[in-house]
Structures are given as C-alpha cells and as structure tokens.
Image 1 (cartoon, rainbow, N blue to C red):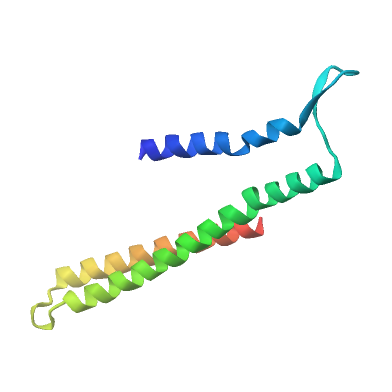
Image 2 (image 1 turned 135 degrees about the vertical axis):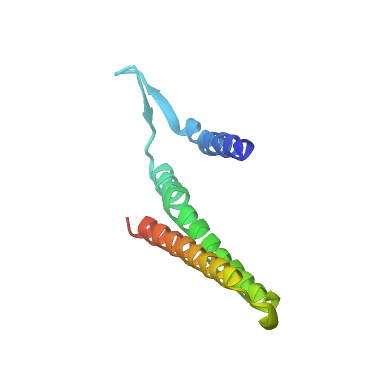
Length: 119
C-alpha cells in the first residue's frame, strides 16, 4: 500500500514537469513568469481541465461502476452458495450485515463521485 502511495506521488510530481518550458525570466522585474501566448494559454487550460477535472471524475465513476458490478457478482455468488437445507440464523445475519456493508460502500462511492463532479 505504501509503495502505491509513493508511486502516485512521484507520478503526479513528474506529470506536469513539461510546464517548465513555458516559464521565462522577466528581466525587468527579475521574476519567473508564465509565458502566455495564445497556443500556450489554450494548451494550459486544456491540460488543467483534463488532468484536474475530467480524468479524476472519469476514474472515480469508472471504479464505482466496476465496484457495483463486483458487488452484484458477489451477491449472486453468495446466493448460489447458500444451501436452503442448512440455513442458520448466524449465516443469515452475516449475509445481511455483509449486504448492508456493501450497500453503504457503494453509496459512499457514488456520493463521493457525484460530489466531486458537482463541486
């Protein structure tokens, strides 16, 4: 898990490295400024919208849909594994608790994705 976090941090640090070529040193003020020609401004706005809005929202919605699919498959597998002749109260309670847990996780994912898309 920690290796994945480190890889993600490194990836997001390397991803915008190409933006350095659009910076220039202003000799009058002696500061570093972003050169804003028309093509650079268009590229920068497109890059920002894609990487900051569309890509994360698409990833979140896609993973939420895949998790929904996996939960449906898991629920169907659980139904097939239940033997109607050997059903105990404990297995019913466990199955019910697992179903509630799955529903809560799915609701949290969809709320998070929709909140991210709206805000």
